[in-house]
Image (cartoon, rainbow, N blue to C red):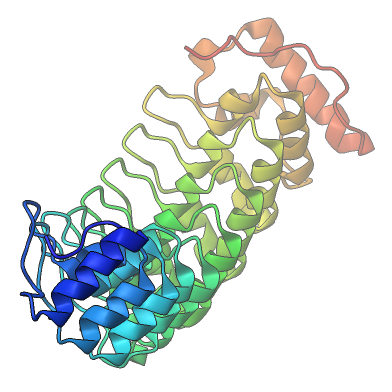
Length: 355
């Protein structure tokens, strides 16, 4: 092999062979050329030597990767720049991973190289890898790169791009669920009348971006605040395959619960906490063992909510699982809480633990 190791002996031998006009693009057993090996070894000097003597830029290794692909994967910006200057192509697709150099850079958090690729007019941003992910999916947790990709889309292509689902049914919204800044960038890039459709996309498990953002109150606020108020309940009421809405998932997470309920119109909050999952459990049932969650629900329900004996069945759907004495305790406390503006202090568990 003309070149293998990044050391003085290896480089000297390679340079002698180059001077003797050895075959520059000969492959080893893994189908790596000397140029590909030099890139993998981050050996800029050898890369320059090989290119100056005419090494082929587009020769593929066993995984259909070029030297530039390896530079993107390894994250060496100097080598990447040299390859670009010599005319290397940026849209090759590997096999079996079906990744582009842009994807390789994003997966390995080489965002400087990703930005360089995105600055090129011919970059392909809609290519899917073997998991059905596009560059948008892979850039979801890096807001600056995400913004750069979205900027390359034509105005009427934004919704189509963010609606692309991976093989698990996830869109870029699902991937960005824990990154409020990224969520805001995506939503703001869409016309207001397209946002609802985008955030209602469900994965194979039936989860929307709200379900995925359950443990990130700031993400929940970002999503709901950027939707028209009259569309928020519709998104909150979406059930996954287990029958859970986002409120079921956050019933014991006081911060997330408050973030959602506070952004719903007051006259829609009771409806939201009464919806049942596949076992007949409401959000109130789920919250019953968490004093802080109950405080939040009671504080945010409409002031005129009827807690009378006649209305108990309307507030608690899954009444078959409620102990009579605890049902009475809940409504007594609820009335007191609403009438004197107080809060619940150390309430005893009012429902049987969920099974």
